[in-house]
Each structure stands twice: as C-alpha cells, then as structure tokens.
Length: 305
Image (cartoon, rainbow, N blue to C red; front, side, top):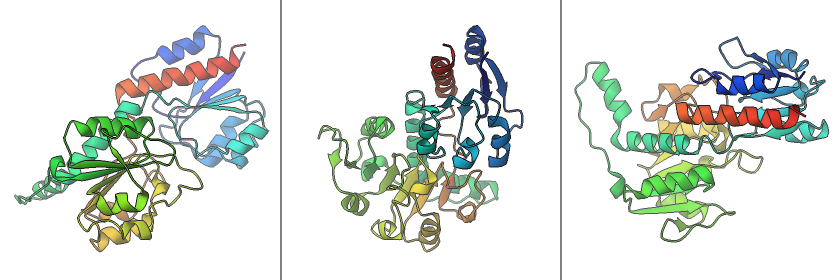
C-alpha cells in the first residue's frame, strides 16, 4: 500500500474530497501537523519513508531528495517548481507534477486588488486612520495609467483580460515566447515597458535566467511615481535594490505577495510605500480546492497501479 506525506498546509480544510479520493484508491496519507511550513531538516526526515509527496514551497533540493528512498512522485499544490531540484529528481526517477489550472483566476484577481490598492493608497490611508490621523490623499484611476505585464502565460493573460474592463490608457506586455492579439495588449521589449508603464506586474516563473530580472538597472528605468507588483516569485526582483528604490522614492511604490525568503521578515515591512501580503494570491477556497484535488489526482496517476 502506497504512503503519501502532505507537507503543504492547509490541506482539505474546507473540503475533504481529496482525502476521500486517496482513501478510495487505498493510499495512506499523513498531513503535516506542525501548522507551518516544514524546514529543510524536517522534510529530510519525513521524505525517507513515503512513496509520494504533496508539496508546497518547502525546499526539495538535492540534499533533501537524496534522503528519499522510496519517493516516486512529487505533486506540487501550485505551479512553481523553483523549490525543487528538477534535474536531481529526474536522475532519481522521481516524477514532478504541478496543478496549473486552479490558481489562475485567484492570482489574477489578487493582482488586480494590489494594483487598485496601490493606485488609491488604501493601505496607507488605513494605517493613518488607525493611528488617529484623518488625512486625505489623491490617488489615481486605472484609466490614467499605462500598465505593463511581464509574462503572459495563463495568469498574465487573465490579468490583462480583467484589466481591459477598467479601460487603462494602454496595456503593454513583454514575453519573448508568447504573442497576443494586438487589440488585447501591445507587445514591447522589457526596457520600453519599464519606461512607459505606471504599473508593472510580474507573471513569470523563476528560473536561472529570470532571477533578479528586476534589479537596480531596471528599477532606474521606471517612472518616479510608478508602482511594481509581484505575485509570482520573490527572487524575480532584487530585494535590496527594491528597498533602496522605495527608500529613496525613485519609484512610487510596490505591492508584493511573494518573497525570496518566506515567511518574510525584512526591511520592506518598515516602508509605508510597500504593500505586503503573505503569499495569499492563490488562497481562495475555489482555487485551493481545485489545486488540492488535482494534486491528489496526480499522485493517484503514479501510485495506484
């Protein structure tokens, strides 16, 4: 009988259909009982005795996977695999699956929420009011803005679809691998996108090539009142360069849902022109249920034979 460890949490907190499906196929499971993300040392201990892993963003590097004696499949609840040593997994004949359909709309909606928030300065006004200050400030409408989307896979394209309803001045996008219809958005290069956009939003995977895609060089191309939004992977942006740009007000602000190190406890928490959320873009009930169910389907595909 196959054994599966569910390291990502929460799991099946609103709907136990994924667990019932595992039981239906005679697969034993154990759920992370720590109530938090497991550390590298902890996952090393867990991974030794399981045939399958339903994973989140915990480190699954060579040091961890080398301890996996029986592991046949890693099923990722989500789309990113930058936490997994894919080459070593392949060498060990460990299959890696993702759940790329469930989070698309949830992440896109969260992106829109962040864009609207930073344009209106809602988080700043809220903090001032809670501190006893009744202070009004002027925001901007989407109709006043050029918006740049970096990466137009499923999520980036959905963000553009939602944005078009707000009638921005123009939507630019940069993606060397995808071309959209011209009436949806205008394709351009990265440098021009950064120079022209009032809002820049990142929607691409983290790879060796895309790490620190946005560094001090790119931030210096942006307008002094422009905003950058990231709901993809933290390491796409050079964090220290971003801190400096925000401190010096060389850009207008940032809204981040993802960080190089999570949970995040860095200097960005001290900056009023930086809105932070704790990697919750895919955390809607509908999206989470879909990803969890698909993750189990992926496990069954490899372990039910």
